[in-house]
Image (cartoon, rainbow, N blue to C red; front, top):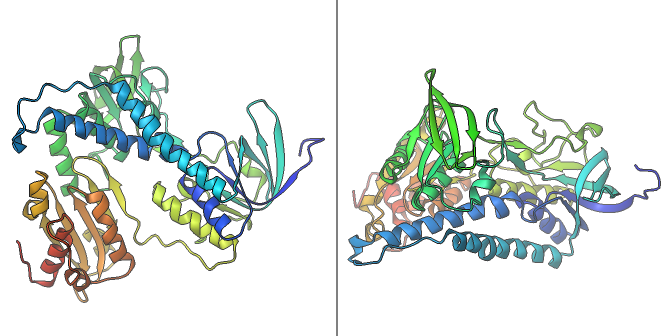
Length: 470
């Protein structure tokens, strides 16, 4: 503690106002705790400001632009060539989408009487932290309970320092114009989503992926559909490619990469690096506490998010598991409940994962391979969107829905969707997996017609041996 600095006492403090932090604050306040949130940059965190939400806005803009360019199949002809004003697109994304949501979060925090302290938190011990402001002043706080929700940041790789025309995903979302040539290093879900968005907006995109397959967290037959879509859009996907270095000037940037030891140079207007993220657990004084870190810098926690320091909890990207906002939401509620003495616990059985590519991909629970590796006897049942009336009327017939169920009792242990509306359809399957439902439960649930959701019932019918439309 700084000499002359009198520590202020607080009940529950939260470091970070991202998806995990602000949800933890609201739930803790609802449970009767007096809450103080420390945030150094964004209310709403990376997700609302420079991640999940603005990326989906650009993806939506890209789809609208493509529809405006070509809707001949619907009989819409003689449309003048649409012109994209990307400044207007960016203004809409920033002010009508992001600002609206972050403003909503601020309103909710205020409604729940959550105190927001601006600055950067540094730990002193298991019950004390100091918040430093930009003017080098600070305030020390003593807390009863603490939830750390500091999130993650993009990984920077050698030869590609983030500056100028070499950008991370945040920079990629805020380009001043749609590049004629864009190189994306890293074909995970962030890189693939933004590659597709910019391709739809008119860019020629090259993806350099270091492994044999983009989107490694999804099954190959799902990824194949995305690759087919990329090919139609003119996106070049180069796998087993190791990015070596970059050189930039006022007009563009040159990237050198190697495949099987052979080096190649390509020129682009911008290079976006999306090779992963690292947890924000360094340089915050955790070494002065009993909190334990893994070799990757993740905080070790129990099933309630409690660290080795009994009154300190950690949630979101800084703990083990997928770096997903909805995972952080769930962990936030568990940690806030634990502080209030409730018997809460994290359950990761049915966390869905979604990628907003063309087509959309979504998965929950186990794949067939996962289930068999776990010793389960399972089968799969599959229904194509080409057999769904709503998908046909939308002219979005690529893709399929697949159920993974046990052979003996038909218990649903997983599902995968590649196709229109996958991001929304997966929620029903998350309920099914989480609730231990069986295929008969889905087959006997009447789904409205004509809707995309009918593929769920159709696949369940097939799993029971009574397929109707296939």
